[in-house]
Length: 638
Ligand code: WTA
Image: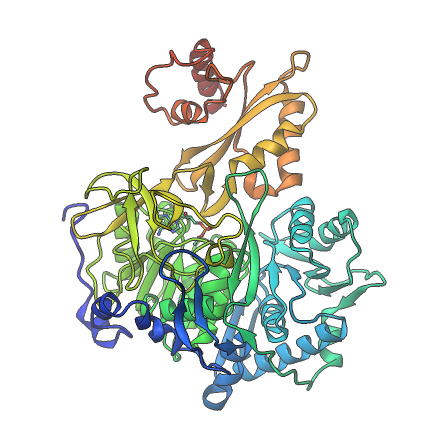
């Protein structure tokens, strides 16, 4: 079989698929009204007047205008009549512990915690920051906030104290729910100490902190409350879900952009939830009777959309996994699939590349016959990894959906529909029905098939964030005259309109499927005493996709030694967290610069990736390039 031969969906899957006929026609002829299909998946307190309210030109875009709803009601209350004693969550902890919550259990705990938060002073529109690993209490806290109409701001547990402070201050958040600690590969990590440091660095006082006990024995300060004690005290309480306008913020989060500071993204209650529910149904083929597992950490958008909101809105059982894929053994993931008879498995290419490296004996040791559908997200997947996944995990019988989307898009925008479209390994697929995604030239005209360009979304979509719907902050990313959102990715479309995403076109890099802004890392590095200048770039890496490399030029009187290297690493860890730690720190007396003094990051990238970099005569200091090649070789031999 050729590398890009299409693979048809198996008949057995097609026969049971939630979406088995091509719905594109309906969307093409009745856009945006066809998005009713998404609105209909929700149970509105107040029906919406229009699927999309706008003037036909630019923002504001008001999805499901006039509609009122509450996300906690959508994910819990409305399921009680039919499936109160079916499982909502199955949690697999790092030490091998398991916990399960039915919809009734989850509803009760969310109500109790919402009552507790309200007593602590949380009201609608207050931002509550959640800083926790993947534990059921994080889901409870998210839904309790949603119940009160208080936007949550989840900060990935691996972020540093400084990163937490920045994200709380930017969000003006006076409430924090955290935990005492968690285990990483069996080692206990102290989360509370980091949270306390962040709290002390804030330029205002927190109104309350709640601490979930995961390790035990943490000492609580005067404004700190124990989660279990609160839930116990409010057991049996009911809190009516606060009706929200469709356009009200459900949550906000921060992601890495092209500037030195994190970019705020706020998602709406109606449009976001409808889009996430619709794609969970149409692309991930989630059914209420399923057990569904998306391995993402809830701290990132994938966890919000496809671990929590999408699956729970559809009333399925969602698996939460706190651990890493190779602990305690490299078959951990397949053991969980077998034990829980998982139907749908959704993960990232970085994990798939590790599975390939570890070998097929691990999945072969388990019965994976419950699997019906596989998914991938977060990075381009190369055709050989795709085929391995399809064959060794899916037994050649499960469709694989390669889903393209972003923190900003909220939900999937480009993917095959698994019961409808042929799959092309390595290519995400056509834009979903109702989505106007295209590959553009810098002047805004559409690229020809096979021509590389910028991935753009030219019409609004339900899951668009408030920043784009209202075009306030980073909203109007125009190409040419028309309104459009430039995603920051480079892509190419083929003759059938299938889009292959090649990677980021901007200064964001994708390390193991996690977004890191090179400008953010640089600002941490240049703040180190003794560093004159730094350039941070992404370099190809066999399993992580991309690795962070820092090119550092020390001040004249500062030696480029191990202590400086350690200070650089420590500074990045303190400012962001270990996820952004440079894999290599390369010292150089000078960085390559244009005559106007701009650092040539693209050239550094080419050198580091061993690519052709062409003519260097436009540089002010071309001699530095040969020097850098030598240094890089020196480093990689270490
Ligand atoms: C990349 C994660 C290729 C892309 C949901 C995007 C992908 C960034 C794919 C967003 C895919 C995501 N194929 N690349 N299927 N999915 N990406 O915001 O570069 O953490 O811009 O959202 O991941 O990362 P984010």
